[in-house]
Length: 335
Ligand SMILES: Nc1nc2c(ncn2[C@@H]2O[C@H](COP(=O)(O)OP(=O)(O)O)[C@@H](O)[C@H]2O)c(=O)[nH]1
Ligand SMILES: [Mg+2]
Ligand SMILES: [Zn+2]
Image 1: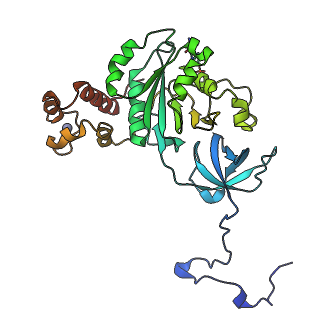
Image 2 (image 1 turned 180 degrees about the horizontal axis):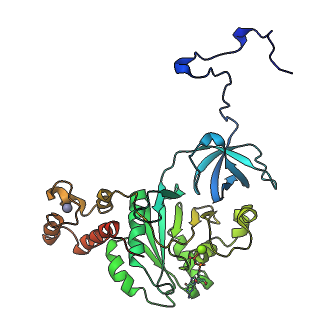
Image 3 (image 1 turned 90 degrees about the vertical axis):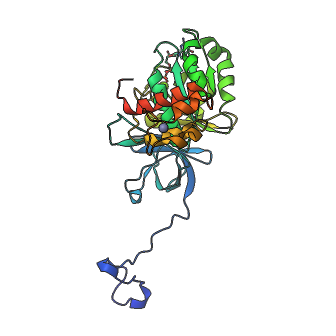
């Protein structure tokens, strides 16, 4: 039986003027005023674990979001069953504006960029001093990605029980970025977590790096009660996997920040990064580019930076670092 018969007064149905041949719109879209705010903790094949107040709920993208997707760290609006009870599925109807977007492409010539993490403000670049060997090119790539996304970099050097940090710091010390060195013993006695935690207060920090460098070990040391903090996550991504297959946001125990564990990366494709933007990560060198030819890449013969630095305006190591970062954008090598 039809609900509205021919007795319905025409004036009761509000019909938008039929412009440009559009179908008249008779239904008023719900505005989702009842939607709750949530934070995406992890994504697993279309299922998102979302923290709503103190509950973790499982949700999927509402169709109305179209191709727009929510990623770990996103602030979202969710509707539907928000109880967090087993087998319930809520819907994400809105992705709030992001304060930052960390992207990567699989390769430099890969046109498909993916958003790794949203709303982070710090990028912890985790590198083992041995096993696996440090890969400076990968560090450089992560640095470019961090600068491009507006994240502050933090260098975390793990496994100093296996090799010294000295050689690596000879080249990275001059970048002037903060760094922390950790080892097996300090992981056990809590010193490693304490030292890293100092750098995490009040921030959302994404941990990236090659597989096996110790990201998950460190994150677990920072968030000992990982199981409880993630609630339903295990039900979604479970199956006893030991490797990290999806990024996962975890709150620091004292509520002073968030850490995001990510799967290992073999490379950090930078196809999406405009090389012209790299210089902005070097405010100490930027004034020296005034004498550069138009559209200078700062990695060419006529670049004014060489003379400017030779005149003593900046540390030559900084120019070397800039050139190395620019070169990673041009070079394609297996990191
Ligand atoms: N010797 C040593 N091994 C470590 C250290 N940190 C982590 N590991 C080991 O490195 C391996 C890989 O760690 P994992 O946290 O899974 O690395 P991820 O792939 O970066 O998440 C594990 O066997 C850890 O026990 C460290 O400081 N020293
Ligand atoms: Mg891991
Ligand atoms: Zn230049």
